[in-house]
Image 1 (tube, rainbow, N blue to C red):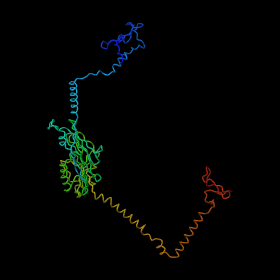
Image 2: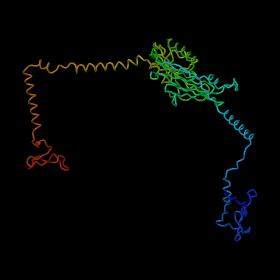
Image 3: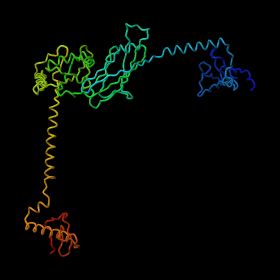
Image 4: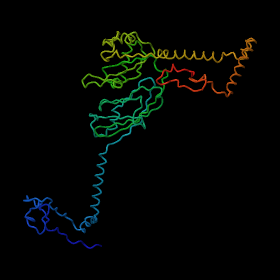
Length: 438
């Protein structure tokens, strides 16, 4: 056991901070040394030294520093006091757990859709409000909820699916048009946030995509609705109303909505925050019947020319959609699937037929050597055989001879000396250079 440390008193010249004292060197007067007053005296000095001495640091004895690091003395706590400490800790821990947001898991929801038709799923806030309700909140005041959806084991949604929610007090929508490449099962994880309590609720949406039994409609028309946002056309009741109005223009009753796209996704501009300004929505409708004369005239080249001049197209069905839907007729697009296939497949079929005919003539219509010899006279065959044999003999002799190359084949030469002459002389005229020396 180490010996106890002696009682330590600060050196003279030191005072407590509470007294606002200053350090004074021992053995010096107030005037200092040499008639100078030191700056740390708190008084103005008559003559300031260039480098005033610094006060030595206040250093405690080593034994005091060691005692400060020593563990606190352990005191024995009585039973009631210890129990009181445990109760206070449990209450504090329970209060901290009570402040953590709750998480609820809703049952899986299964839906199905076909290719070539629009898919819309509404994220109902009432369903998640029931999960967040704990009996202490007012039923008349609904908490704002925001949603986040993504493909399972992926950070984002699949390419064909989109999500929209305009306001935390409005429902969210998952919408899109699946194609033949999307056939199968897609698991979407939806997470809802309660903006009042910061609680969360999750649900798995299992979407099964099946191919359409009748395929896609061959006749498709796309309309631009200028007075609506995309979430306003996603409810089923609004889509049914749009189809009823379109049936009067198309003169068909087998219409169905194929796709709904926001104009912002097509490069449109964000509208000004003025009441009545909307983003615009592209609605594609399909049918198994031909287009009406009204739609054909609205999409004719004459109508496109009038639209380029800022005029209305040639059509007699302008106000059929009004006042519920404001259609931009200059953006009308009509797609005829059979016409497209005819335009693409007919040239390919003709080219394939020509290739087959040419291959038959070149490969399958050859007479052969035996049949050709039978149809040729003997004199002509002997003549051809003689010429062919002589040609082969000359080629063999030319390939086996070891004579040098004739000088006449060289560009410029001298017959007597065999000296070659530069065919491109410098300053002199090459045409005047004699081929033979004099």
